Image (cartoon, rainbow, N blue to C red; front, side, top):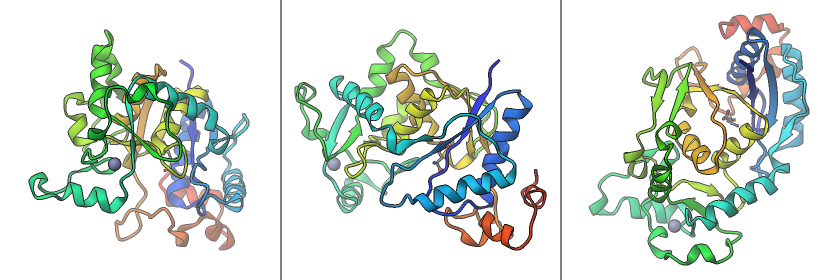
Length: 296
Ligand code: GLU
Ligand code: ZN
């Protein structure tokens, strides 16, 4: 079996121990399987992405002994593919424009009849305000630009269920484990997706795409067979599986790994600069020291 995996950092800060762990686990698995390890720069958030961080990520990875044989994929150069997928989903009536801001969503989700706001893998489950405004003919209009687009999750699930092969579309194979020890063949509970995950944003107003849409399109484009990443993304995988089903994309095997914690047992924050690889390098650590620190 071919094995192709990737490490997909966002260049919004230094590479720290948690990133090093993720990159090395994926890299070591690729080597053990005689496979390929690729690198992808997830820089859709152009307001936060910096070229200096990207350069430092390459440098730190090379220092750690990580090699990638193919050209690096950059999400900021993939907007055309994202647009195409959004056009397809829009034409099928599965997207709607959303003009709510965070405060609107919080207020609507907190309305007395709603109870406590439900938190899904993407934050507060969207209360549906703008979904109810669109009508059956909206998909015949051109897809609006410069506005957030959400996936109508109930309609998406219905479209998948109408598909003859719906069942295999809504399962995935996990070789690591989720936060509650989920492993093996895992069913996406499609009958509750609309309530527990809700209408996730697929195109942010300021970006024209989103993490979820980009990650599934790019994994497919890079021919990724095994997605190796932190356990914090396990719950988001159900969104990715739905999108793969809707867009007819191949489904990789998933391997969610444990998260590196600090001495107090706290998860390393994305910008925990105190644990930056660069700092350990400056202190005279070797790549072997780093491996030892993270138990590899
Ligand atoms: N860019 C994501 C992150 O920094 C990783 C996405 C993924 O591996 O699916 O956490
Ligand atoms: Zn809205």
